[in-house]
Image (tube, rainbow, N blue to C red):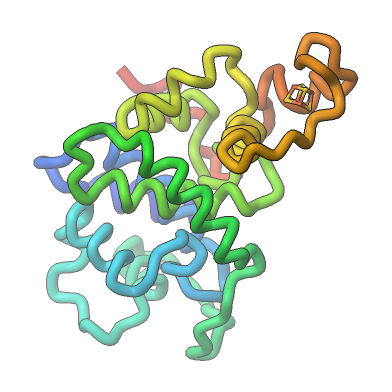
Length: 224
Ligand code: SF4
């Protein structure tokens, strides 16, 4: 599968000076979105062109080395991973389907408010990617292209520990983020007086199960 080959390539050129967990996190997110045939890779990841280059230069400098500054990063990535790839965007910078800037900004701000100090440049990059994936239709870990929910929880614990800790009841991540936004805005959307009495309890809690989109799930069990 395309995204798996891209993932393996990116991991193989991951910067040795960055933590392996972060290299794998971003390799999964980038390869998941780079497998799409249309749209801008940066937009799909919630990053502007400068942000995308910053992310790739920091975590995958070998990939960026020698790349034409005007080259399409998505096609360049497929070429480096020796994948046949027919892009269908015809040079057009399409806006991704999930383009809701106000919502994205609220989610980004929520994450950054709990960024681990000093946050440096990794937390803003990760917050942007997470906020964009929140606008998707599936479990957050699936919309990110991660092997499983545990990988998402671990990334949140590393970079947004305060927010991660607040989800002490282990609510589904997207539901939790939006409930946090409602609390900040002092808006109550829940009909029930408490989660325990709520008929929608199963929608907010319980396992976030599902298939990994890009066959990466097997990697976790193989990991030491
Ligand atoms: S379980 Fe019900 S009350 Fe609790 S957050 Fe979900 S919708 Fe609101």
